[in-house]
Image (cartoon, rainbow, N blue to C red):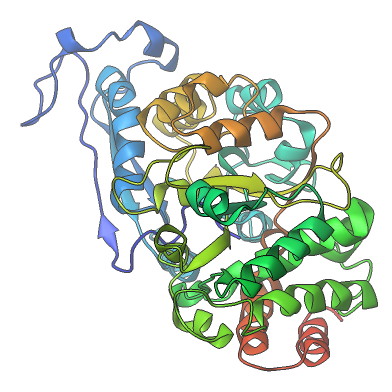
Length: 443
């Protein structure tokens, strides 16, 4: 499921204070002479205004966002007040209903954005934002923030979920090759297990969102085994959640994640992943206690400090293979900006976030992926970010958005997540799939 979702367990509130370029600066702020305001002239000047932002990103990820828009804030005079909350999905509804909606929210799930749009809470995108959306993203990407023909937001972040992280040194020392097909991946898994190392490590604990790493696995395998058409039908509930083809995908994942011989390297039996946070789940790859960890591109920012990423470094990643070497199915996700307020300073901030300038600037600060057409892969902070952008820009890539993020929130962020935890804990595939199917709204 998520982009850099739960990067810590505590809620952190962060704020950027910026004043008009010619106005007195707060302590620690930069003077106008240190900022070139020409690139921001298009956004106008809004001295003395404030835009509040609410999102799930905290800690270093929040810092990087704030550093990126600092010049914009200095030059426009907008005070951008940012709050990051690890329980964003649960608390945004409470805030909105309590009359405390932020001006702008960063939604990690299109389904959640859609809920507020249908309730009449979100403001339609301005003409300027809509123009940038058409320029920067494909129709598919823009459709994720479009409800009943109206655009409400734009993609902020993209991530490629179909990666398997590994240690190039471990592979070299064990005589292992990166698999090009699913059958080669299964053969690799067995070879590692036969050597005495558990091939896979995983962690699915994520506070209120516990379970989402398993749903990502199921979606990825369904996409590979059944193709985009069946995947789309399943997400749209044109076929039932417990369709035999979905059961097959779940059982395939179960043959890896519910198998004590194959998981959970570095932690214990397979069931141990239910109590392991997703943030720490890949660390046994570094110690050689686990060979592979399937996780999204954003995991580049979660490795311990000092970990180097690259084909000859501490860790690297390969695309989870499909049926044959030419198959390039990619599961991904993203974060979308949308506004609960319609003021000039809010529109200006949204337009900046929708620009390729913002995306390229953010990439230069640290790990970050964008599907914006104007993004230059050369600006990527890591080789895996660069690979992700190249995949997203490659017309041969069969990209599909995270299914649980597109499903109704009560399913995608509810019964599917919970069912995944029950399944890892020992519940049968059919029992879990049938239960999720019965929970589908309007069934």
